[in-house]
Image (tube, rainbow, N blue to C red):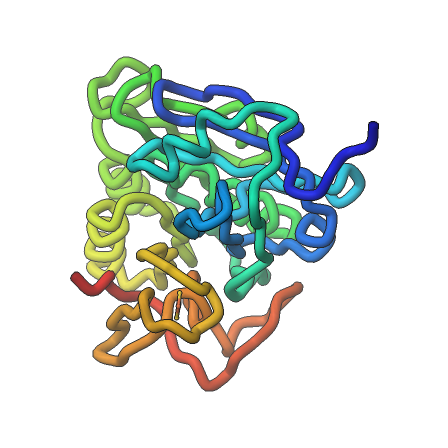
Length: 271
Ligand code: FES
């Protein structure tokens, strides 16, 4: 029997409470760009949850999600198995990350943020940038996908407890990189809000342009409901249609849509 739309065709536990799934969604796989997301309903009448496109295969028609079990819906999703079908998978949504020739780019992924930073870092490398990837987790058992970053010019791995790589946070490794005097032209950071804030504060001191990805609660994902409202530079924005990444109109694009009226997207999630 052939594959059915929204069917789970692959599943792997990456770490306790962290699962990777491949879902058959050929239309999304064909259009997906780094930085975009999709919205899933596990079952009819269920909650809609936004998940970043961690990877995709246009030839296979699959998209890859990495989800951390943090609540009822993510727990339900994690219990689904290969062969099960999800009620809805809608996407790709949001603006793609702007992939240009920036020079030397540091891509920082913390915790489950390692998954969404991966396609961005890969695309930046393919676009001719020198890419330094800094990935981290609380402990070695929660680290995943480090082998996927072998394309990068440099990979720095941190764990909070020192069980693998450098002991400390991704921001410590980034700080050392910047203090060492190595040139960094742009920083992408995806992870917990506190981590992205710490990265932004660090790079502000060095005057380095920094892009973070905002992923607040979403409902429709199309700019209609206002659930994902955030404040960016003192202005109200909707993460789903104005983000998730910042806009960089002055920079040359390799692919991606521009919305020239939208400003830099470095902000904080509204409480
Ligand atoms: S999720 Fe509704 S406006 Fe963004």
